[in-house]
Length: 191
Image (cartoon, rainbow, N blue to C red; front, side):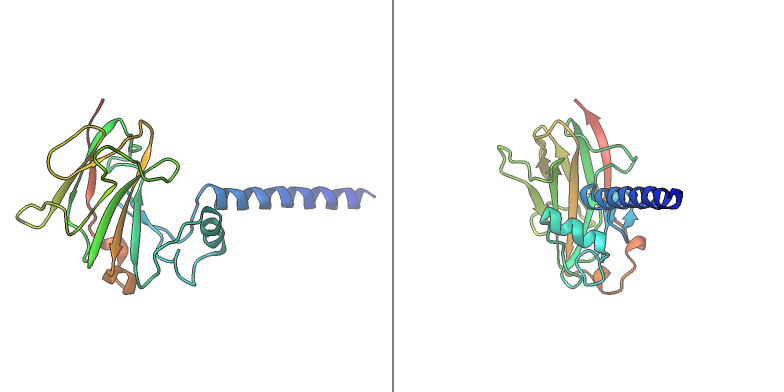
């Protein structure tokens, strides 16, 4: 009888731990196989047949459609280069060079993963419209208040995420992602 009770306890503990770990992996957005370049994180296999089962389940649950391996690569940043969480009350400078790509986009999402509507009707930038310096680099200001030049408004007072997508990039066809240069995210001040 004692053996049956021990087996039942072990089964219950295993089931609780298994369900809890699966819930954390699927609901909280933990993806496996990610790489980091400064504050930017990417999951190159998320849109491929090689994606792990937890990533597939999370993407199915959220309805997200990741870029396929031949389409491009998406990098997300929830913190700045210094490691501080991005806040809608602060102003950030996104500047530098980008990896080689036919096209890139930069968009800001609120904590719920939604684009932030604003009076300027700007939810992102792409590589063909951004104003550049003479050396080809760029600077985009992400801020709640109006700025001249490349300004990406944020309308949340809470945390937000920047997503930098590279389309038709050599990084998806064998390039070393972790050695690439990505734009920096530098906090310039807060309200």
